[in-house]
Image 1 (tube, rainbow, N blue to C red):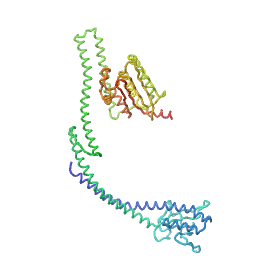
Image 2 (image 1 turned 60 degrees about the vertical axis):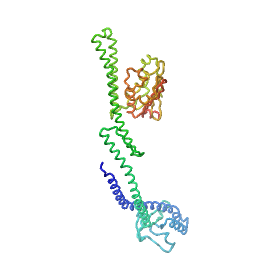
Image 3 (image 1 turned 90 degrees about the vertical axis):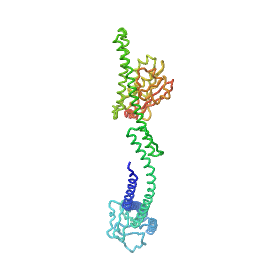
Image 4 (image 1 turned 90 degrees about the horizontal axis):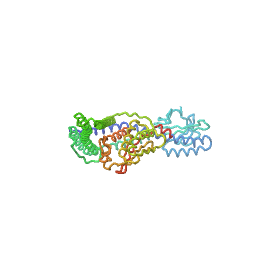
Length: 476
């Protein structure tokens, strides 16, 4: 790695500071001023409407005298730091908080037009040239009997808004300057904390890229850099483990193919060279047939598992009655159950329970689980299949009273070709792929499967499926 990363960081930081200062100094004054204008206009317009609906309206309805109204608007003008006027539609000023009452003096605003605000409720100008500087003016109508009797106008000096906005902009600039220099200190520490670990990580990735998956490095940090380092270490160990698993997988497949092939070859050679007499052919051909069935089953399982692992596998999801599927599969195992004197107890929620899933693949899941339950159940025992509904999910349980699974084997049962020591004597023809297929199918549906087992007592597999919209609407 070239030793320019720190300089790039520093250059980016300086560019950020310069452009940040330009942006703050250019856009902040206008934005702050607009904010104060709109905020002041809303506040004064609300006050103007309140005056128009109370004191001003009562004045025009002769419910209150002019002096009382004058006292009230003077107090409000002092509180608001603004000037308040009550103006007739003709433009005559009835009351002005800046002037005393003088009934003999007629003050008319030339060319007064209350629609000067257009689509807004405020205007910024010299208000028909009655002021020598700009004011923010809001106009609220005084209505009575659905007629406009006059207007309440509140004026607020724009110079006050400019003063407040300049003060706030100045605070922004000072704050930005302080943050800029404080962030420089943070930048120094950040660079020191990040840059050195980053060099270690880069060196490690170079080692992994060259094929040295056993290279280890350590970064003593609990932040994202430490997490990244831990992930890289984990990735390397997983890749190394995957290579070992691949070798183990090939060895397992080779072994599972070689054993029946060796058996088939031996029996056929013995038949050809006369070691096995013709009258024994039927017996040994049956053994050969069983071995070919085992090979066929293993091949089909491997193809199924490969298809399930294919990225972007499409599921043919439909709405179907899981209860009906369970009944049909349970009925298909009647012959196997009779041989071991087993009973299958089916406990289903409702007559029909619709799920949204790939029906053929879910049939395979239930078939594999039930087949395992029958294989590992004791004679004269009961296998229970149960469906329950909870939070728009259907849970399917397959429970047996068999040999159970040792505690240490529970986390391994879904691995390919895995067979526990207890199951090896019970399942001579098994491939060790059935539960791997079950796991892959359920995962492809973005659902979960769990197992609960006690050695010598029995095993229960529970998997979830999404309830179909058809079912939800029926319940609703």
